[in-house]
Length: 74
Image (cartoon, rainbow, N blue to C red):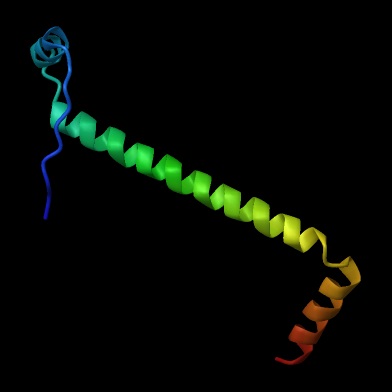
């Protein structure tokens, strides 16, 4: 299902885009998809930064020991 989204733009801009044969709907759709992708990537980046801060607090020896135990348990 889709919904209609509207935007107010100067008349001259719309006319010029139309003159060049620009598919305004496609441009808007693509811009919104790219913005959503950018927002999600930023969200993941922040989550990774938080995880990195937590992991830095764990001693390296404990991480190595945990990995070895996991490998031996398989």
